[in-house]
Length: 374
Image (cartoon, rainbow, N blue to C red; front, side):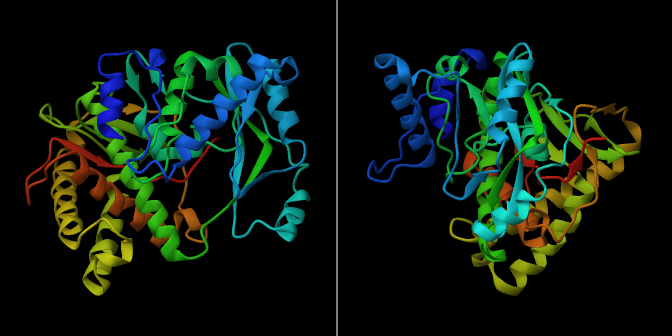
């Protein structure tokens, strides 16, 4: 993805980007981003030549997702009630299997009601809120599936879905692009069942892919000057997230979310690599890369601890309040968090040459957080 993004976006306002379709090298294997762009183009052609196919918006689903009854009505109602709205998103409920029994079980919960919420702006003043997108996921950003998008907005973005290196998280820049055009709302009454991976290994590989794409996207945004310079830290304090910049880090552009949590994940990853080798994380990452990334993180977190008391942080009120990780949830299991961490390391290696023991110019450790709105 990297060179393609840089080619079309260097020096261009994100709102004005026509997201060009990035086909894989082998055209016989179409990636998800390609398929979604092709579907949107087909809808545009139908509406152009046949009035009965005209529509106000589009909503995408994968084969392993399903909307609960009434969700489309709730999404559309939110869209109608608010000004400057370009998209409305659902609650994503991870389920182990997507079958009739699972669907019937969740039908009993459809009477639970919640309040609509305006999601934070993910793009403003030439900057992308990348820490919000990758750190807090569907709590403040849209997911590809289950989001109702205004068709006029879709047409302004031309081909919104971009192929990521590992075919995952292609909705990240879509969230930022949509928020640059208008408001994104969240309707907790609209629910989407999303099938989770079947075992810890599959979960680890999926999160590895996400973590790598997060780091690669961050590297692209660094090159396009769409994130602040310096080594920024996001961490919890007094039931809120705070942000501060490490002193004298002007030559680095980096983001670390919750360094204290990362220490534990780093230690667990070290043990896993020593016990079973790098192959437990799937193809594409070596034991040497993982060990080098862990050494870099440990060096950085040690320095963070030594300067934390000398900085003046700001409160990030736009982010959900910190919540304890629930290891019983597959997305917050030890395997999932380790996979994300390893993916971050792999992604940083993909965007730059990292020398052993040398702090790289672009740093990203952003393991997905548990959060809650209060």
